[in-house]
Amino acid sequence: MTQNIPSPDAAAILSALPLGRDPVSIRRRIEAVERLMEGAFEVPGTNRRVGLDVLIGLIPVVGDVVAGAIGAWIVWEARNLGMTKWQLTRMGARVGFDTMLGLVPFVGDAADFFYRSNSRNLRTIKRHLDRNHPATMTINR
Image 1 (cartoon, one colour):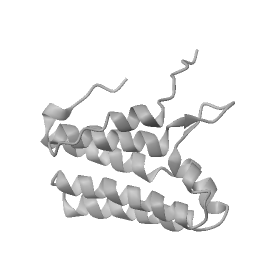
Image 2: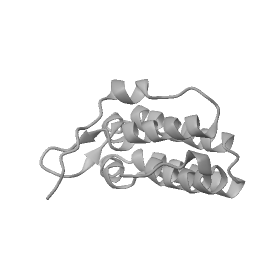
Image 3: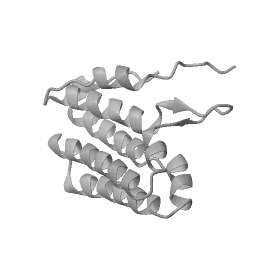
Image 4: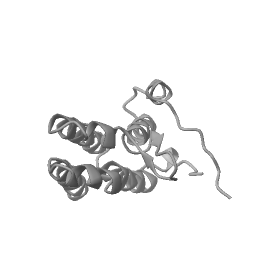
């Protein structure tokens, strides 16, 4: 039995963005942006969710550069959390790979559907926060 979870609209996601510099606010901001970029909409007839990354990636070059810039912002926020250079390098490499792959016509659009650099980077950030800032832990449903 599958659950139909209502998809959050962009206005609800953006209104939930906390503006503080504390780890809890940063975590919420990154989670909201990742949800918007990777899973804001459900593809009709499938259980697959896509976000703005796939949609703006359809715009040649400009869309992939914008998606890459948003991914770079997530890495910047991770830097503000005090993550190690190794973690930041890996996260930056994921965003760079996703952006370069996205520049290839047709292949890049399909890759955006399957390779989710922002989701992978969010998992890395959550592991860091859970280890170094335990007060930011949340229970995933």
